[in-house]
Amino acid sequence: MNKLVQAEGPDDGEVWRNEAMDLYLQGLKVTDICRALERSRSWFYETLKRYQQSGRAGLKSQSRAPHVVHNRTKKEVEAAIVRIRQTITTGQDPELRYANIGADSIALELKRLKLKPPDRSTINRILSRHDLVQPRPRKNKSTKLPADYPWPKAEGPNALHQVDFVSRRIGGSGERFYGCHLLDLVRHWPYLRIITTKSAKQVAQVLVSAWQEVGLPTAVQIDNDIVWNGGGRGQRVLSTIVRLCLAVGVEVIFIPPYTPKANGSIESFNDLWNTNFWRRIEFSDVAHVQTELPLFETYCRHRRPLPEFEGQSADQIKPHFEPLVLPSDFDLHQHKRLAIRAGFVHFFRFVSSKGTFSLLNETWALDKDRWAGSTVRATIDTQAQQLNIYHHPAKADYCQLIAQFDYPLAEEVVPLDLAYAKIRPSLWPAVKLFGS
Image 1 (tube, one colour):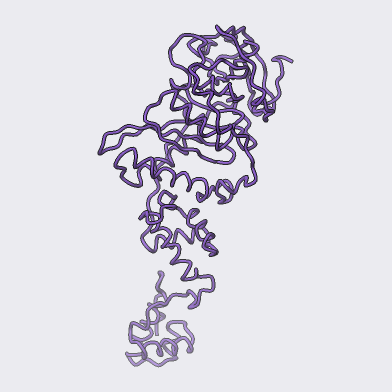
Image 2 (image 1 turned 90 degrees about the vertical axis):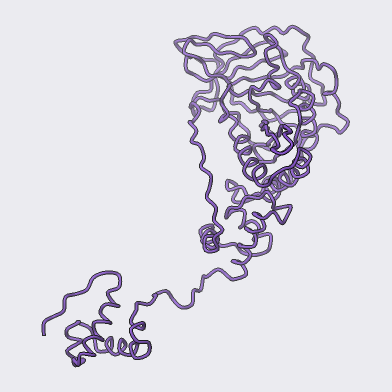
């Protein structure tokens, strides 16, 4: 008897079993069948048994997976995963109405239920099996800032607050509002309020209320919005907001114009607000937004898992932190005009190809051959009435004082009230004179 041609493919075993039964039904002896197929007699009789019990269907290849999977997710855990996702997406639970819907958020909720969460991939597989996977929105790629960008060194709670606005209009009513978002960079602790006009009075009240609750920072970092910098009211004019910050001993940092990535943490938080809050439900009016916003704020403080902190929520990062807060009867911001206090106002600026940069409607020139294309920190020292220019070399643990200019102000500078003259951690590296 000629030897059969060997079959190929993922179902080789099924092909051989069918071939064996074909030969058996043709009347060939078992010995001849085993010799032709190069199979053992025990294999043949096992195949024959399967054929006699289930016919041709019994010859199909069967899964090699063990009948009992010892590490299979428990049914109650799988049910809880599905229930948590559905609770979030349907908004049934006010505390989870604006939660993230990903595996990290679900794992944290499982822990709160005293259930041991499986790994992220298992949670995602379970969600996929129940058709609960949603595509992630694509993130725009952003270019990196220069290597000599003078990032402030925020190492403790309330070292640095970033503040920014989002502007929205309610579809039905047509009402416009501004979301004013403050974020403590170290604790990832947000303070969120809604204002109807972006006036200095309303913004000042938001900051005061935030600092009465969250505490005073060493510095506040902001963009170049007109409410922050005072707009086009001439040179060396400090806005109401800058004066308020100086009055309570808070340094002010202006990022470069049109550079939102320099305020990356608050910009990322704004994206979260847009995805989890603004787009989650349809708001009827500004009052509706005001009512729902505390739920989102509470979630971000107490139930939002932060991957960079191994899934901890913001309230778990520094649980024993006691902030320095403004007194509840603070009313300095309600005065008609605030004096300029002794303090520091910083401007991060990119030096042009001509060796110049601008701040507060005034242009300053540096050595073109040495500093064109660099990034500098220009600091107004209101007490000394000087403008100090610093360069932070890439990867260096120091900064260089590269230039100084007289910076006389048109009004008296008042000493900082002793109540706010607290020693706070420095945000800046040690200073060396350029060339030393």
